[in-house]
Image 1 (cartoon, rainbow, N blue to C red):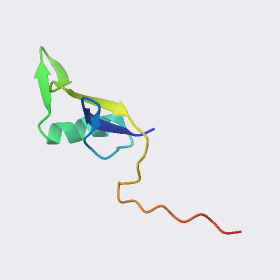
Image 2: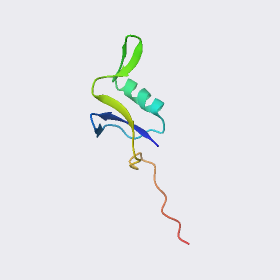
Image 3: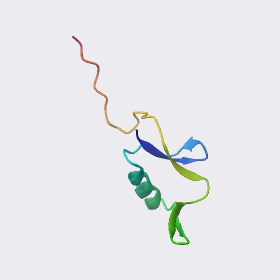
Image 4: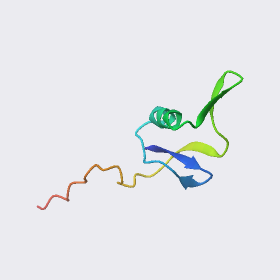
Length: 66
């Protein structure tokens, strides 16, 4: 199951195959802080599993015709 970055309950990013990739995306966007030696997202942001929405730019092949 893919993961994405959310603010409250609104999906902000495309889906990524792993949670680690979402962390990297959040860090590039400046949404990651280090508090008391622990890496955290800024307030209001979470990483959650999500359903694929096929908006990643990867074409989906048409179903095979038998």
